[in-house]
Length: 110
Length: 111
Image (cartoon, rainbow over all chains, first blue to last red; front, side, top):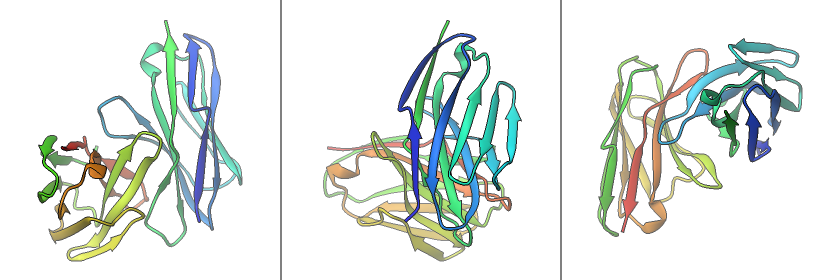
């Protein structure tokens, strides 16, 4: 059974204080690992897809990395507008279903 | 943005009544999904569709049915709503590169 565990559940940072969110996973033959951002009252917003260990993707202050067992979402010099819940999901090969983690709620304090 | 709309956006209904939620997409994506999101559980797959009239169950399908008569529309029906089905429901579509894009959600309250 595919499993995704995200940590920490919640994280409070001062503006400009860099940190990382963790997504640990077990999946039979990874097709892709996906990161989403979700603001309160809205649907998840797609951020990145990572397909293989060693791959990295960047977007503004966010950088996602992937190993065979986990993915990290690094946030560099965050701003208050980066406050959101960040979700991680995995999709096994040959399967069109995603398994989601429960997310990390990130708060950036001005 | 995959051009996904959901209706209604909010609904309050009574226990035992049938409820239908609608998802409409404008991108002609083959795959469409229905999820529910609850505190502590994250997003869980209810049903998904891989083409017109082709559907399959997800991990929490009991009490729900779906239909897809056109590529652009995917309906979720709660046959007899229960309080445990109070949740936020999201529709999603999947691109050719396996990225799923989500609609704005429907908040359903069953009293």
